[in-house]
Image 1 (cartoon, rainbow, N blue to C red):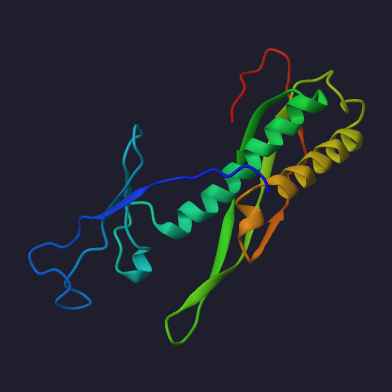
Image 2: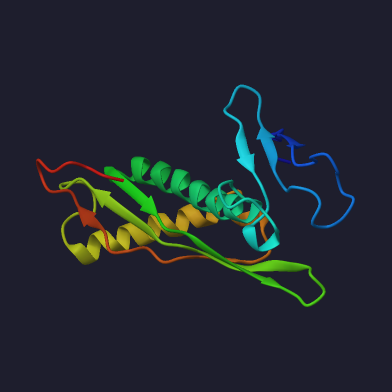
Length: 173
């Protein structure tokens, strides 16, 4: 058996107002996600479920967790493979189906990473060679991502073609 890691977060409902749950529309969905020593995350339900659109909702945080986990593994494998990544951005999306009875589930999350690399590193001989190497790194990252390995729906990766940093250009990501 492998090493065990434990994670803790406190979720505190702040939306009771004066009436609490006297009716479905009577209470707020606002809550705080607290992790010791870190900034509080203000949460709510998705606006479709009577939530506050200015706060993060669990569905967004799930999609972000998958994208973040993939990115961190990708950067690890890039570093150990001699690929110098200088920019990384992902516009991840998730699809959730809600059944007539009100319950539902995610059907998929699609990660769309855009990677910028420094020229001259491993695999930088041709654009096709670089994209193939980065595709392998994405594959390895997906295989290792703890979060992706823990969900029952499909997590797909559709990377954009690599961008090679232009010498002297400002790096964004």
